[in-house]
Structure formats: C-alpha cells, structure tokens
Length: 68
Image 1 (spheres, one colour):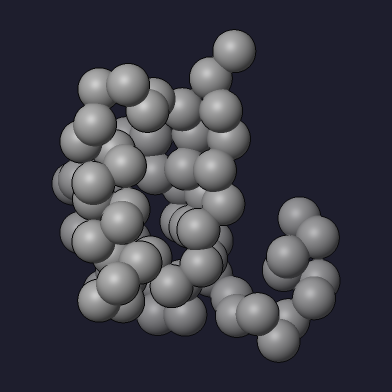
Image 2 (cartoon, helix red, strand yellow):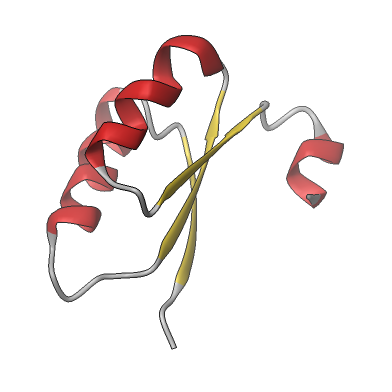
C-alpha cells in the first residue's frame, strides 16, 4: 500500500526542498497532501512537479481545514 503524506509549508524554502526530494525519489511513491496558504500561484507550479501532489488551501490556525 502506498503511503499518504501530509506536508505543511510545502511551498516554503525548507519544506519545499523536502517535498521535491520526496517526489523525485523512486522509492517514495504515494499521495502527498499539501497545505498551502496561497492557492492561485502555487497550485499550478505544484501540479507541474507531480500529479501525486494534492494541494489544499488553508493554514494551521484553521482547524476545520485540517479535519478534512
């Protein structure tokens, strides 16, 4: 079974690098859910990286977003 991974700050400097390394490593395949604050500019660039990336708009302060 492929792992499901939830990443916060995926468009930032550190988590962005970790996300890129994760999806380009052949051993680590699965579904990656990403919490992003700015959907318009980030969604397109994230989808270009990999179809495994599923971006969600929200922040850590919005508990309803995290429950979904």
